[in-house]
Amino acid sequence: MAMTPTATVSPVMKVNTLRSCLSNRTRAMAQVYVRLRAGAIAALGLAVIAASAALAQTPQPRICVIVPHFKDEYWLSVGYGLQAAANAAGAEVLIHESGGYHGLERQIALLDMCRRLPTDAVLIGAVSADDPRLLDAVAATNRAQPVLALVNALNAPDLAGWIGVDWHGMGVEVGQFLAARHPAGSAPRTAVLVTGPDQSGWGPILDGGLALGLAASSVKIVATYRADTGLREQLREVETALAAHPDADYLIGSAPAIEGAMALLRRLPEGAHRPALVATYISHSVLRGMKNGQVQMVPFDDPIAQGRLGLELALRAMQGDRSPGLSGPQILPVTVDAGNVDEVALSPAGFFPMLE
Image 1 (cartoon, helix red, strand yellow):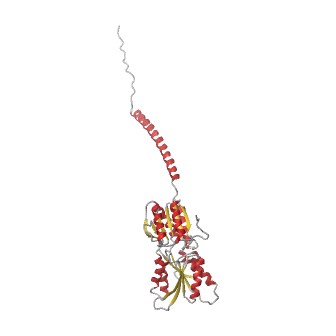
Image 2 (image 1 turned 90 degrees about the vertical axis):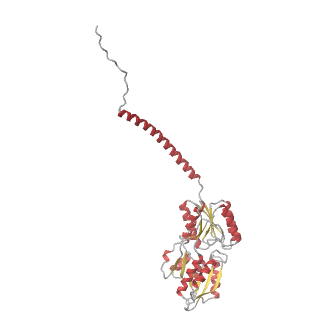
Image 3 (image 1 turned 60 degrees about the horizontal axis):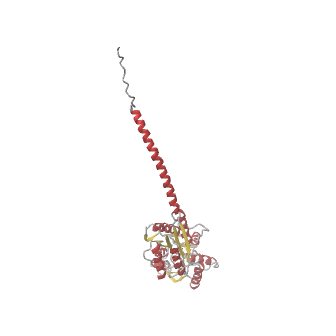
């Protein structure tokens, strides 16, 4: 019997074609990618939640601000600059008045309070440049948080910064304006000066610059009167000065002195002698006087910019970035003749800073 040959059937084997290899590999990689992507999304979500929680827990920067007072309109513009910059930076400013340039004890107490709150930095418009008790209080506060001088000179070591302009230079600008009008050798002119207290961190400095600026002029300051820079106090000195020197050609004065003088001179009878008015720094009232021709000149030191810069440097000082030395805007001599009154910007009408 013939044997019918049988075919040997080999076991069926899976043949991995190129397409199937790629498909398998792609599927495996896709599964890995999906797992990794899901993990990454979960990790990212956790990171966002953690960052949000950390941000929510990060304390808002708190800057303690101590000024002499807001009786002088000049400081309103400084306060406006501070608050505008704080709002933009998400910082909190705690603003305190010292009660005037005779408020040394209160200013020392306020420094102690700022140290104990605590706050992250202190900006101080000092009522005295070099009183030993104030300097001791500044040094104690500076050991806890950075202290920066604001506007007024403060002769304390290791300050984190001083925001302002050179008050000597402010005086020089006034003197040079008068010297240009009345150079040495021309007809003599007299002036009375009504300014801030001796102990203030600007008055005596400005006076020295004024004397230097007048050196090449025919203008002589015949008397100087000093008081705190509230309107009432300065007006009293203006009245005293003009009663003693009714024929003075010029009254040179602080912003409140010029404000008081403008009101006083408006009440004089027609034909009465009126001294020309020159301000040693800006305020809203001085600006109005410049615009209506009552005030002849003022050096403009941009108090809004000083407030903004003060807040900025205080925030930097919190991070250890100190700015020793004087930082501030350029002084702009504003005169009726120059026609640059419109370059002066001050705080809006009705603005008053929030006080603690």
